[in-house]
Every structure is written in C-alpha cells, then in structure tokens.
Length: 457
Ligand SMILES: *[C@@H]1O[C@H](CO)[C@@H](O)[C@H](O)[C@H]1NC(C)=O
Ligand SMILES: *[C@@H]1O[C@H](CO)[C@@H](O)[C@H](O)[C@H]1NC(C)=O
Image (cartoon, rainbow, N blue to C red; front, side, top):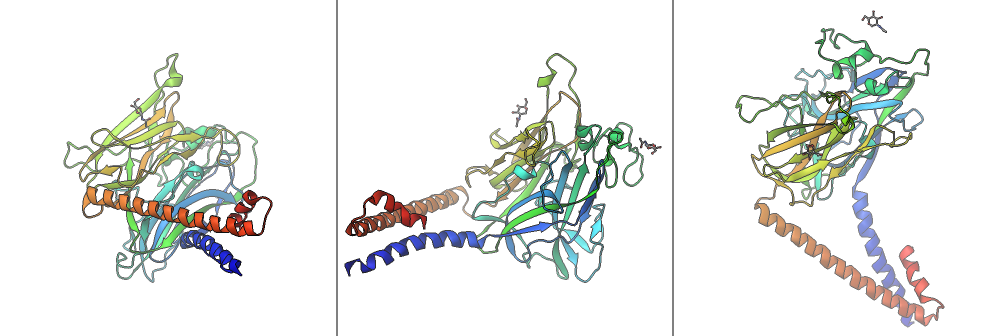
C-alpha cells in the first residue's frame, strides 16, 4: 500500500521533462519543397528564375533554410556532375489578381506589379535576397538560435492590394564530360565560346570569365565524343519556421560585397556591387603555391546592433573572408572547407561548406554609423574568373536600454536557466532516491542497472 504513490510520482517527474522538450520541438515546423525542374545535359547551363515558389505562408519567423540539388528519384547530385553555381531566394510583393509568368530566365523586375521586399542592405542594386549560397550549401549552417527569427508575412508590412511571394533563382552547370571542369564552373568565356551577353550585346574583350558568359542555355566545352543523358533535376529546399510570436526578436539581413566600390571620402558614391571579380595569377616565382590575393573594403553600417550570425560566400580558390569592426576587432571570420572525396557533400576540390559565426548574443555589437572592414582572400597560384566575396550577417536591434539592459537580460536568463537546472537536478535526485528506495523494497539484484531503466523509457 505504501508503494502506491511512489511510481506515479516518478512517472510525473520524468514526463514533465519530456513534455517540455517536445513542446519546443513541436513549435518548429519543417517543410521540404522541390523547385520546378531544371533539364541539364553534359555542358549545359540553367540559370532560371522561378516566381511564386512554394514557401511557408502566413506571419512566421524563419529559423533555417537548407538546400541541395537532387534528381527525380531524390538522389543527391554531386557537384562534379552538376555544379550549383548559386541559388538565391528573394521575397517580393505581387499585386493581387494579375497573371504573370511563373518561369523566366532573367531576373529583370521592373513592373510595378512586383515589388522586391529586399533585405536590410547595403548594395544599391542587386543582392536583395534573404537567403543564397552556392556549392557550399550542403555543409553550411543556417539555423537561427532562439529567441531570434527572420520575420516574414507580417500583414502590416504588405502593401494594400499586394500579397507576399518568393522567387528562386537557381544557376546550375552540368560539367559531366567537361574539357575543363574548373573553367566551366568559373564561367570562362573561351570554354563557352561566348562573345556576346544574354541580350546579344558584345562583351568587352577584356572580360574573360564570369556570369556574362554562362547565362541560361549556354554550353561549356565537353570532351569530344562524350555523351550522357539529359536529366531532370530539382533544387530541394528545406525551410524551418515557427508561427510569429511577440517574444521572437526579429533579425535584419545584411550582405556585404567585396566588389562594392563605395568610398567613405566621396559623399556621392553608391554601393555599386559588381558581385563577381577575377583573381589574377601571381607573378611566376618558385613559391607561387603560396600566393594569396587579399582584397579589403570598408563600409559604414547606418544602424548597428547585435550580430547573431555571420557567414561568407566564396568560390573555388577562396581561403577565407572576415568582417572587422572600426577598432579592428573580428566580427566574424568565415573559412571554406574543401571536399576530399567523390560523394555529395564531400566533392574533392570544391568548397563544400563555409564556417559560420554564432556569437553569444550581446557579445558582438556594431555601433550605429560604425565603419566595418571586409576582407576576402583567394589563392592566386592560378587565375580564377567569376569569383565572389560576399559576407552575410544577421543583426538584432539592441533592446531599448542598450548594453546594461541586455547584459542584465542575458544574466537573468542565465540565472533562470541555472535555477531551473538546479530544480530539475533536485527533483530528479529526489525521483531517483524514491525510485531506489522503491526498488530496494523489491530486493532487486542490481540497483545500479535498474536506476537507468526509467530514464530510457
Ligand atoms: C563558336 O561560335 C561561333 C560563332 O558564334 C561559331 O561559328 C563556332 O562554330 C563556335 N565554335 C564552337 C566550338 O562551338
Ligand atoms: C587575408 O589576408 C590578409 C593579408 O595576408 C590577412 O591579414 C588576413 O588575416 C586574411 N584574412 C583571413 C580571413 O584569412
């Protein structure tokens, strides 16, 4: 009779713990979507813009965005077959009731029927996306820690008569059988036999490689006699989100570009972001394996805040990129991981992941109007065309009373966590003690072994 209440108590203690975990996990929703198909044969290029893609709807906070290229059976496709040059997901508002083509090969966007709902900056044109990466997509962390999120679908922000949608630009190059695989991924104009751009305008003869030479439907040189099937591929993207709540702190997305020609000393200068550039091979010497080209720019952040996340985007040859504060402190340093095998996610010679920064909230703060420095380093032991040097940061607005308030908040949160931890420990200890006592009554052979059983249930 005395034992009657012991077991239910233990059960309640353990259940309470589990339910907390489940509730948190249940709040985060995960959706897996497929882009419309990309049809690719050896040497071919697809640079498509898909409007009104499948995306989480409603007023939500995005927590994670991951992607990869798959075939019709859902198999992951390695980069040495289909090189994912880049993809970007852009938020926009579309006038209700208009009928516009969902598919296009260009990202021209001039009608008032569609308005880009761009990120927080800072390029004056282009780089408006919320998310976007390239070959590094599979192994680059994108999750956003609590209590932060990227707010979308807020009815108060959507202009009257419009609805919020997303478009996806995917640029993929099929390099099966390529004469020069690296050259194809670097969009070298000679390999594409291209002398005019997408709109038939002659290219400057000095332009030897980059996006203007590997536009939609162009072909890169393939080894003579090489044949393989054309196949249907898709960009599979996985989005995690939670329903919007006022306790979520919204993040602003900033993208810096190493080719930004803005100058602090010229009041009229714009953030003219070229997006891509060429790294020339270093002067030939015995030591050229060690050659590194380092570029640096400065930009001013109009409004600062707490950096919650940072990551760079580089192409093959990249050896790292970092963002620094006005005083030289490192805000975030991001370095590439090169693959070493053949399987998807580990393709030798390709950047398969970029390291990311998740500073403790409040520990890396950018002041309003602070000058930041960005550097982007590439190996220059050989020439690289069409490379990029972007840096993404996610910034939270500091809470009203600035530093002291925030630090206090963090401390209180830490204190609460510590207290809960102690309480869980105490309760758990009591639970175990009760259980041991209970099991003792039953005269079990090995209490040690049995102590663990309920925890595994
Ligand atoms: C390259 O383009 C030119 C004209 O645009 C064409 O005459 C020539 O056959 C092309 N060469 C190859 C190898 O496709
Ligand atoms: C880039 O190269 C410069 C010059 O060598 C160096 O000072 C800097 O630390 C490098 N940055 C990164 C992120 O590796």
